[in-house]
Image 1 (cartoon, rainbow, N blue to C red):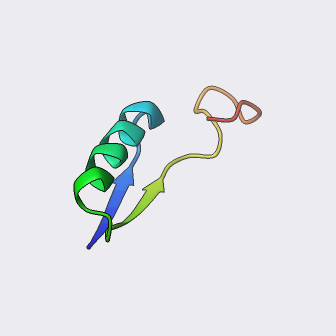
Image 2 (spheres, rainbow, N blue to C red):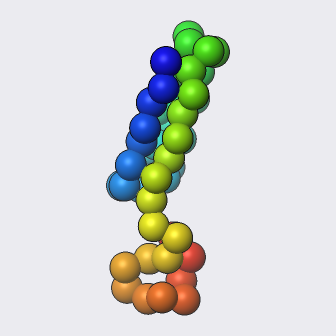
Length: 45
């Protein structure tokens, strides 16, 4: 199974990933987001 997590805050996304991996070790998870914050081109997200 493949799961795509996109946008939002990384901390809740990581919590979801941890819970999914507890019961489903065979899944592939990809997180898609911005490299930089919207407010600035120099601040890493």
